[in-house]
Length: 66
Image (cartoon, helix red, strand yellow):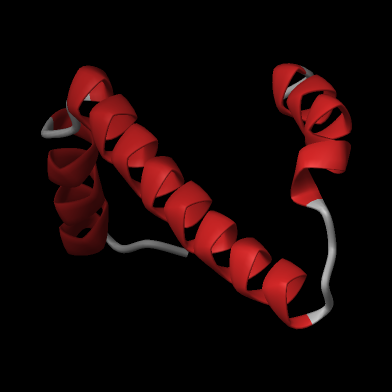
């Protein structure tokens, strides 16, 4: 259970949140994750001789469902 001091601190943090800024931060982090995943996928496909071009229609379809 939170005491009055901790409750005040939490309330101040919540009050200071900017939903638009949080959304921008989340979007930026998601883009970083996509870039990292793409680089890793390309490295793995090269190492295992996978043809990503043949898989591209499926990748595009899956990306649209998000």
